[in-house]
Image (cartoon, rainbow, N blue to C red; front, side, top):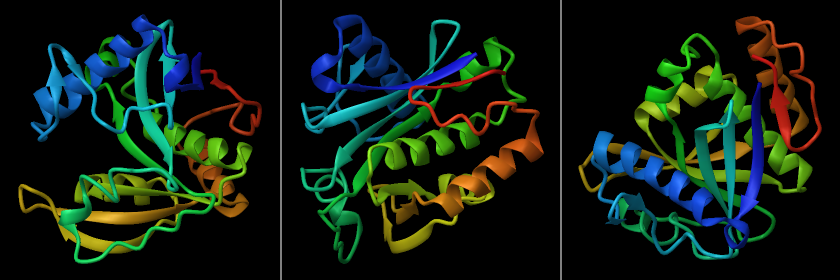
Length: 211
């Protein structure tokens, strides 16, 4: 089974934080070579604060994936680090969250023989359910072109708010990710098309899927 749960920054144990931040270093610095700040084997920045909530996916006690949520009323990467990438950014501050540092550890997925599972779509569905469960109106994020395609292929009816260029002059997108019942059902239908996921309708939080 894979379990998705949320944990606040202030509730992170030393073991939790080191596991998440070391995986982020592996993904964003070592593999993607992003301009991120690292201390030793860990990647964390000024947005990892008590305003942060992490979503973590665990399979057989192994962390497979994670992302960072911050309410848009607080400083975010969109209004800070990524702001120079765009000509203009108008981000609503009421009842929305920013998603950043989204990753799925491909090496661990391969080692655990889960490459044939639609983990991205599962994770996207978890994002929607978290937002619905905690009564947010939607999610904003900055994504690359390749991630934009992955999200669209999941069936999520996202919209592009602004287009920009990263520090590598690559195309990046500020997107809005609606978290309503319509998109919730679209992702469930897509999951059922890809796999026999019996507990796709599980609305309990934390969420557990049987793989």
